[in-house]
Length: 269
Image (tube, rainbow, N blue to C red; front, side, top):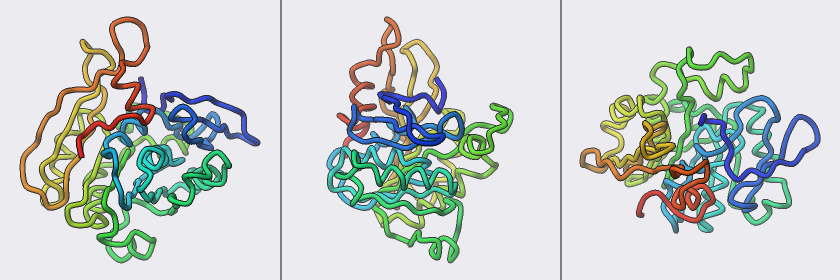
């Protein structure tokens, strides 16, 4: 499984080089590039599940792409207000088109799109529209493939998938700046990035909780999902893993299916 696998996505052709994809069993729809760029799927749905049920407040989705994770939080948490932060003009345009879909009319009043770079700092970040201490929760699905992992001629996809040195430090610096005291952050990444993420959390977010995501019980983890709280004290807690598939075939386990389709949360509030 790779980061652009799609879950519960019923694809329909949209005008031009786009598709309209349904998530949460039709709970919301996304306009996404067809055959290019990053296409949202399991990673975004699992990241959104890191936000507890009943979350009420402002949430920033850094590196939102077409907005899948942020839309998923809005669909599950009716009192959440979402800011989709995306630096790619093409992907931000997809998110805006998604907001205009009639299928998303119930969610759109609570979602905004900001075209900005998650790595901006200081006054530049504020001028771009990311105010300090403004969000109760920050989620992020940053690029986490090494440059050698996937050679792709698609510049839009490469921008979404390939990380630069020090990326987690810069993204978590932004998350700490824009989160309110006691606000939370959630990150999805490869297991190999856990040490770097924990280092970047120091002095910013504490009491991290993490779980590993395994395709099957006997297989190695392919993702980690981690949450932490701004200003909290305490070391790392490793929670029971999430197993996506049972031993028979490719069907999702009941827990994974509920998480992917917005009927459960990964962590207690």
